[in-house]
Length: 379
Image (cartoon, rainbow, N blue to C red):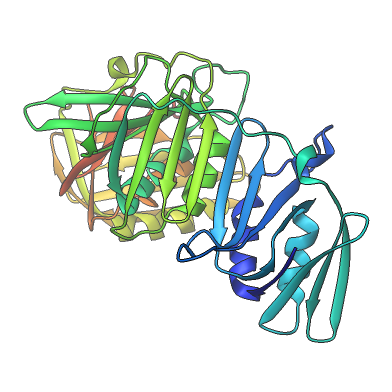
């Protein structure tokens, strides 16, 4: 292996695999990235460049980087160490050379690093993927689905069925859509989008939390088209120059439709930015993030109040438009903060049936997503 590559190009590629590698795995190669330098031959020069592969056996990533390859070759090296080195190199051009004893030499300006590596044949093989259908949608839409749902995934991995985001097919008078849903039992988020292609889903379509985090970093907010393929217990994402594969979780998502409130007598409309900034100030005194914050909805104002014996108290009002009578509800304010962070419109609507009923939160100008927050009893 002997190649020249732009330092920033190499750094971006290595940044993508940092969330995939397993630093504490009993298998040492799962903390490594496989580098494969390929030369274009004849008129077909498109296959040339540096291919980067990373896997933890549950998810896998392959990315192609532009590089001037003089000698082809392969080696697996520690991904975290190589990333730190590349970020610190002094010159914009990097030379990678495979030396004797499976050592990778990294040169840039006057800096020379040599990292020990493993032969490519020792690297864990990637699993085969049998596609049973594929859909096409924009990067921006897929990223929106991930952003508007991933924060609600349960962080406790023993809660089978809640430790991933559920994918399903939705069809009504508006057409056929792909919906992603997540819940931790205290709040729920759902986002959907239209697509092109054939959507072949099984009842158990739970996307792992780690895979959601990787997708969020990979996807840009542009209108480039990506492809989602669905196989037996696995999903593959293909975008220009990159392939991301992940195994689905074995768990059954709950019947979430039962907790989505339908008949709400109280409907409050508020400017999203004003509510978000108010909650940011209110949360300064919320020491115990699991305690309820009092939300009193009036005819013209929403009064948010916190009393903390040790830290003090705060009360602030936000202008609202309220349909229905006054109502006071306790919420985990952090849950509302998370929702406001992924809603893109200027307004947000909160709908409630009574103080102990689930609250439906949505953007009145966009019906591609909705959120549910369970109330808390006020002391």
